[in-house]
Amino acid sequence: MTTQIRAPMQRGEIAELLRDHGIAPTHQRIEIAGVLFSRCEHLSADRLLTIVNSRYSEVSKATVYNSLRLFLEKKLIREVIVDPSRVFYDANTAPHHHFYNMSSGELTDICDANLQLAGMPTLPDGMVADSIDVIVRIRPRDGAGGPVAPASLPASC
Image (cartoon, rainbow, N blue to C red; front, side, top):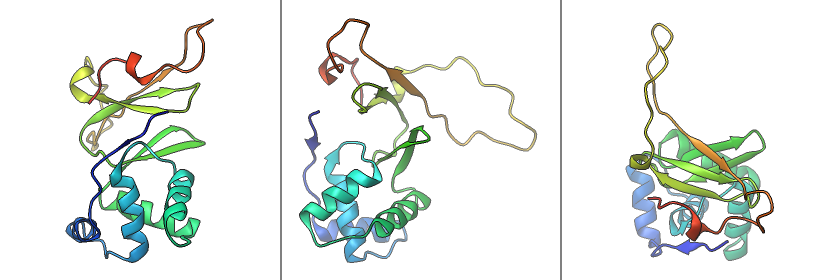
């Protein structure tokens, strides 16, 4: 899997981004946010922990999970649950959907404009729709050799 790296944000920019979302910019939060916002990749908490700890001093698993929960509450990131045992964190909070490659475990963006829904079910009384998240689960055709290469997927965001 190829990971695109975005232009790295400076620590001051990350701290300002956190402050703009009402989050106190601790050293650990800056490091965690720096990884999330420097990669065009959907990361699991465990993968994020590995990357942060490979680059910097030890950050605990609890700190990563607590930071992710705070970032979610403040709408800085999105949580993508592909199944109960697979949760990814997405720094792209713009409306979009995902392909989930069941063979490789890779999650790929689908632009919101590339998906059309034809109607909504009637919502229960007193409820409003907050969002719609679509995950299209894909796998190689029978007999195909291995995971689908990102270049062969339809254009995304």
